[in-house]
Image 1 (tube, helix red, strand yellow):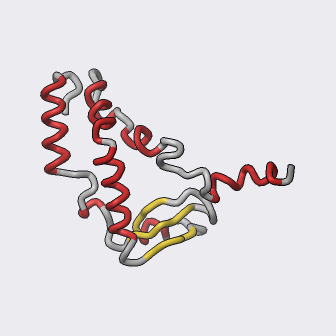
Image 2 (cartoon, helix red, strand yellow):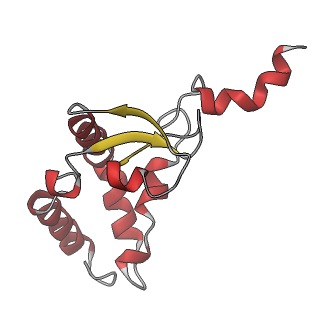
Image 3 (spheres, helix red, strand yellow):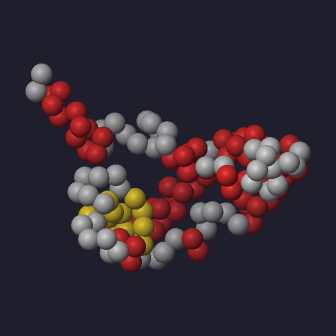
Length: 132
């Protein structure tokens, strides 16, 4: 989608492309996915088993046939559930390339939506406060 296109054209193209080539399609997700972190109790990510083995010390907290469908559901939640926010970013981009829009940050760095304050990786820095 070219940044200089009008509102109607961007909206139509966005809807068409999302329908035809959804980013949460199974072809974008490995069958051997795992849930892993770079460090024990660190922020967890979905990745292929092969990718998790590239660096030593990767802590795998989930694996098996349930991981890929779970990753697909999570992806659909963020893309389909936040479609309007994504479209708004596309519409606001009027110069440069559409690839310059950081969709990852737009959706994935939303406190209390993406991360839960009760997650161990978020609480471990506050342990000294428990002693007070």
